[in-house]
Length: 542
Image (cartoon, rainbow, N blue to C red; front, side, top):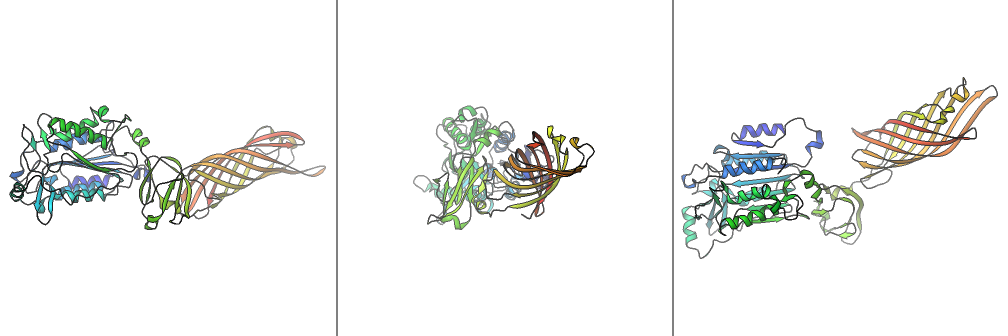
């Protein structure tokens, strides 16, 4: 993050980062954690005199930035507020957006907010085209100096972030609003002349790009209406009520009462309040297509946001375009694109057109996570582990057995394919010790145990823990004045096992700890011991 901030500070002299926590990173897990990123742009210092008169775009961006960066409201990890003439030129804005989005990942949320003048061009070849004007934009040349709304929409839609919001507090009709309110649009003389010759409104722009999945676009007004700012509110009207929906009025905006305000709830509240405040002159509009439950949250507790989200299945392989996806036995259509599913243990199956099962697995998915369907096709890999360690024994059986034994273990990890949350393991173990024991006093005894067993552990990343059961042959041999002696007993030993595997090049370093209860008969008398063991080992190539 720090190189990104350094670059931003160099390129954007009047852009301000807010809500950024600096310090040590948490390794790869921290890098790939879902983040919330916002770029808030307020343009009011125009070089073209024809564009003078706006009072609040910079304040709009600053006020919304404060709400987003507040950990108790928006909880955004990175907020970039861009204002001032030099920072809001066309090139500077493009660079600011590029810097802020350079490291976006698939599970991130991204918001782009634009406040300033918009304009409209109209010609026989292109029809209506909408533009956002940067500080160096010129009203008489929006094609050469402005930023096409269609291009901004396409740029946001193409970002890798899974959740994307474009919010525009601007208008494109060039009309004055009256009533003490000022509008955020101008049109040049050529377009104004064409508009005067039209009967009714200008034709709708043909270049607006359809929203993609998990994307929202919020507009302060219909394209042919004014977007106003109000000196009594000291903000653009729509922006004022968006902020209100996330703060003072969040109880009213939160229609489903889940403690969160999502993008649809925020817009619906701001739309109704804007229409009321302007007497219906300004009617905000929105376009969004969300997969499953609405999951683009603009405010609310982080834990609530995470628990409210669904998990997503994604697929991009063209071979899957004609396949069918089944979740818990229910058809969900083609697996291509994104499919929202309830978190938890899910039965996932992909079938070909002719009904053949291509892959069928039980998978545990977490809220807010994205699982690639292609990953379900990965070949199953089992691995052998060879390890050595030590066992410590306690209990009444120590009269005849050694308290400390060496351990050699051969384990077969993941012998069969299982759900991601489960790890199976088979193992063979040899214990060996030599020395005196209490019931033989000064006679040297060689003893040990041969065991074969199975374990099943709940897996969380590299760690698994669960029960095990061993079939154990305990034995010992010694020689006294009457000659050599050999004793052994066979019994079942239940216990629990913890296994941690860590990447080590093409192999894995394995650390195993377990505890077992071993009943036995010694000299025809019932007895038992507890054996606690630790083994360190190395697996075969993955």
